[in-house]
Length: 301
Image (cartoon, rainbow, N blue to C red; front, side, top):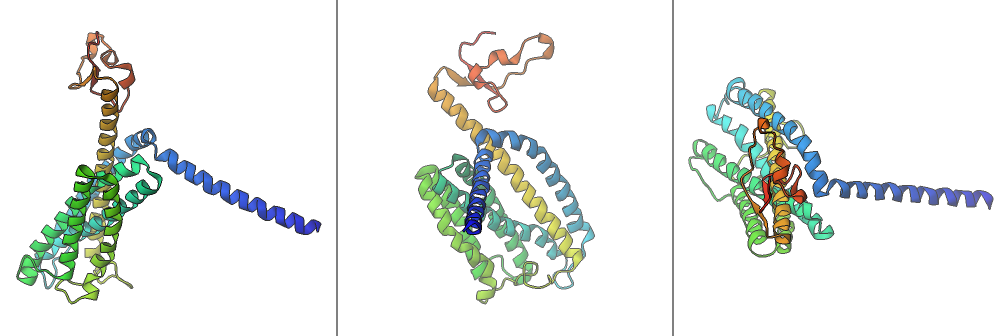
């Protein structure tokens, strides 16, 4: 009995420990998801992502346009691939991110998840539009036409429509309905991916993300991967900028609603030799790194 009791006690302790770890993970996630914490962390991360974006784009463009060889069938037109394929990957990835943030916003009603979703939408629209545009330019010399309503092009066009509908519903109708639409639209992602395998289309099948070894030579695969990484860090950089802008805009709006005397003005540029502290021109409630450019009406220097 003693041994059995001790075994039960040990198992109960393990359960409590597991629950404690799980609870700590959830609490840490909620702490990181706080707007103030996001602003502090993103201020440090943003210069890094911008630097990586610039370096990867420079390296990727050199490898794509100069170092990589022309294709023996497509010739120089194959270089469109280095812009088209990463844009297509990012269009799918950004929508998956949008849907995940919409899910968090619906379940936990977290405002930062909602802001992340709406901030990612224009970036996803740009990637999807770039995918369709470069695909049309690439299709003309290969297929003899800029556009063909095959399964891949139709499903990607539907993806662009889903982005646009989410944006419209969020801005003009209901944020909650927009989140539901984002979740429903997830079913289009596997259709986009499998369209070239499930139906007879003009679009070529996957060359990189297929089972087994990629069919691309390393001289073409390397610049493609580098460009994809550049696109990814570009997405992260622009997303951080958009979220920071939205958080500061909402904070300023709350202060204006609380005190109508606070008005937006152009940020003041005060020479250091003047001996005047710029903080004297700011309402004390609005001082900080996320509220530059707000001045209380009637404040005296």
